[in-house]
Length: 322
Image (cartoon, rainbow, N blue to C red):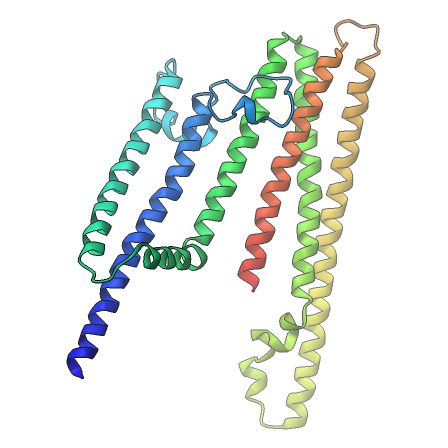
């Protein structure tokens, strides 16, 4: 009986060791996905023309290194003339290190799997599914989000380069910057306002009521022996706490709403300026339909990027709240 129990325990221990190695492999593969995306962006392979849903007005074969890579690589480099080569070497080195680490873990897995009696690919698949759902899910979502942002950043940068390719004058260049900046501010303030409303809605749930909070059981109040006095103080304490929270939430909302309206008006004013630039007789301030289209497309990508960020923020907030 003892021998059978020991054998079972040993088998379980070996399965745990296999699961740990599988987890390490899946983590490495997840980071490989991220760094391969960095590489594709920097070598002009991020977008596959045949997979594009619609014809784009700008090139998608440009080599654009993500700002994360440039920040790491170029922060300590005085000579930045060979920026592309430096970034490529760094990214390739990181991918090479990840691949070597992956090979080590795969060899370790093969040894452990071969030494485990009755181990099959079906068992391995069950373990992988468990890891995906319980251990690796948050990391994979985080990396997916980072990859999505790399795509948005690529489009935003490519649209700017296409705009510059048309050799805009100083006024046209500044107008593009102003409109894109005001779009960023307008969309951010809009998303921040909506995110704040979601947070307040959560904190107004019954599960977040005063009775469920830590402050509802203050040591000083709980130490009062007289029941009548204790209950009266507790009631007063509750009323003050609830009213303070309502007041604070209203201040937050009012501030967010004011900022939202301010940035909305600012962007609308810039859009009117752009529209007027199409019909002006002043050649210095005139914008062609091509330049207007590029500005609008860039603003759309900026909006989509910010929406992606706040969608991820909301999902993270909701998962932590559950």
